[in-house]
Image (cartoon, rainbow, N blue to C red):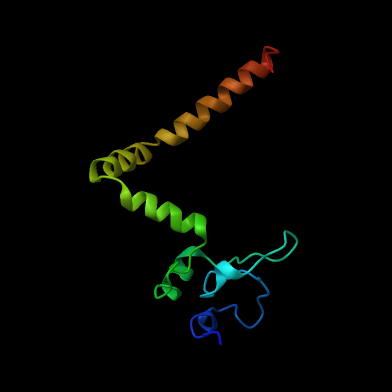
Length: 109
């Protein structure tokens, strides 16, 4: 018998038809066809509701990201946060887009 205590806390429980709910303790045993609905509940809400679950109310990729971040050294975390705060990633994306535009303008692409 399934324990639906946590999944019933979801504000969308009554009308959601997503077959793989991250608030479902048995989510890993469920399957979703590509044409079926995905869970669209925000991650912050799922984290609050699913904090008792093994997956913390997260999808596998989200949980993997948190585990990866937590495994980093404090220096690595600080370096990454400084880079992001400086707009480093935005500058990098902008330079790649600009380079591709220039290559396109000169017929390289």
